[in-house]
Image 1 (cartoon, rainbow, N blue to C red):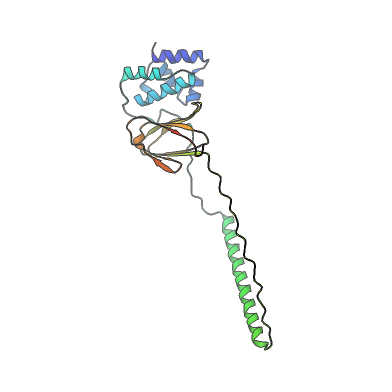
Image 2: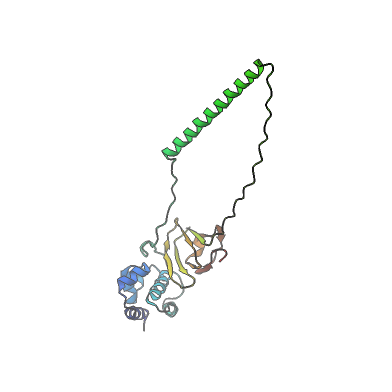
Length: 244
């Protein structure tokens, strides 16, 4: 039985339509139909065809590894050109932080603090000059004894609780395929392509499995520390939050 026939039969046994499989995998329906007909020309290359086969098989509840081996036997090792712009629909929007100019309320608060500080300084300075003049004009003035102030008690700052989450940040120098799943259940958290020049971040509170295609073309940091991605093959990492 071919790859397309196996995926078609698994989808029917799972009671799923092509539209439902597309919604679960974020793969266009036209590409899924082509794969079920053993037509992989719209996948954008062998690497992405393998990723589509793996995602569709997982969504339909079957093991993808025999299908990947069958594809490798028919099409050879990973290679081919990358045409990622039209392969995936964005699964998770990339949030871009923009610099914000100071708000009007903040400017007003700063101005008020400046006015209050200047007024307080002027009041204290005026009072000091008046007290010095009174001391010079009164020959029998009695010096006031300064009352010592109690030293302030040291304040205890509670230690911050450790962060129980794993923070992942990826900057793509070249197009890179990314798959993130939960380490315990295998449930898919994110699958898509981060285009060259783009970046993406994830914060997860459970252990995850991170898989990268084209790892030499990315800069990867986990919990603020850069990870080595200089490997020509698909890179898989198991990441866990600290203290877990």
